[in-house]
Image 1 (cartoon, rainbow, N blue to C red):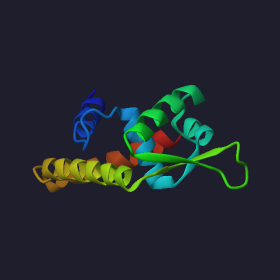
Image 2 (image 1 turned 180 degrees about the horizontal axis):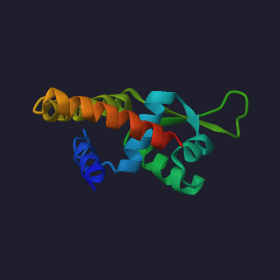
Image 3 (image 1 turned 90 degrees about the vertical axis):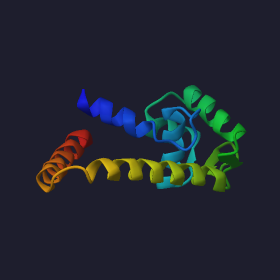
Image 4 (image 1 turned 120 degrees about the vertical axis):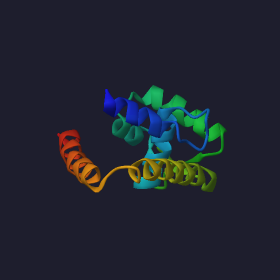
Amino acid sequence: MATFRLARRLRAQRAVDTMSDGQFAVLATLNLHGPHTLSELAERERVTAPSMNRTVNCLEESGWLTRTPAELDRRKVVIELTPEGRAVVEETVRRRDAWLESVLTELTPRQRKTLAAAAAIMREAAAR
């Protein structure tokens, strides 16, 4: 439960209040891993292609990403962030980092060491 509550508090620190977690995940993926096709994004986010298409449509209408035909296969479309989309990701990350830093500074060194160890275990578990 504590992990869910912490995640909820972090998600609340977003640059655009109306953006869903799924929409932000797509922007963050494109920011971290670069341009993707629709099917690559759907696979990475573990959703169906029609669901990803709806998400991408909404993000495109908001001006946060673009679609361009792939150079080698014009049937495919490459999805990438716009400068405005990158700014949303960067501001959200900045807000989340600031909130988390304010929380962590209130902890003792021993508590921070325990959290670091727990984070390593959680990262390992998530990779399985």
